[in-house]
Image (tube, rainbow, N blue to C red; front, side, top):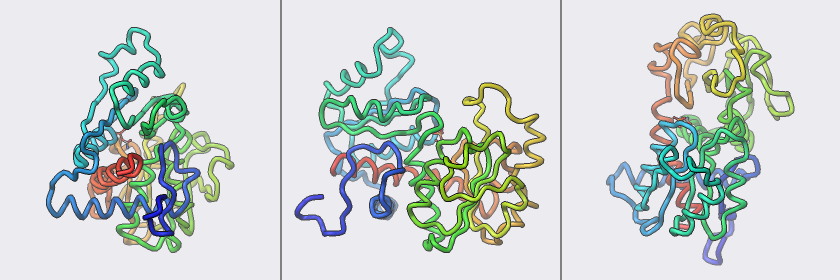
Length: 316
Ligand code: CP
């Protein structure tokens, strides 16, 4: 916060590693900023000059379609230079450590590092090793956190249902391996969602203390009763040591969201999914592509939310 800020402006973030310790004011400030950027971009489709002369590095050690592309677009729409660091062809393959890679890129005056890695805690680790004033954004670490997904999900819900306190939200699927579930829960609890429910087979649920404030319902039909928002999650096989469901068909029969099941929820229930979707594994095509689906809207909103995050962290 500076002397010229209004008194209710929350403290500016330097890094975005998790939503766990953000206040409602900090989250709402980012959502409001994303809303203004959305309006401005859709009105004239001109890059804002807020990050002119700044450089943003995408450091993705795990695959990504949505997050990487939207950070790339977000930085460009703010006028920044963007480096999509090519891990496979970089000197990390010659044994250069993560920290030495970070310091090398910092020496080139890079201002922000957007980091995705399979190991929990990687973004936080890099944030602790930054030497200068650069910012680190966690673009997903293991099953720990995906804060910009949590923000864009909250942003998407608020565009349709602004009264968080009145909402019943269900998150269904492979909660155990899902960093999205954790970040959604942190965001939605902090924003005061009235009722948060999770649904998964028992072996795909973390311990209850990892699901603060959530009702756990194992039967999917029962869990759907009366909900306003459903967030479906895929089976994250890349994080499983061995198969944890008997078969995809058996999983779909118990936990797949199809048209019959969707009718158990409220008639105007929003259907969300962070992607990538696996059709007829956790969600039917008719539902993913149906009138209640917000899945592609989540993707669009992700760019505006990431613009807001980059502008905020870089003090623009
Ligand atoms: N939702 C999400 O993180 O998608 P990607 O893995 O494609 O980035």
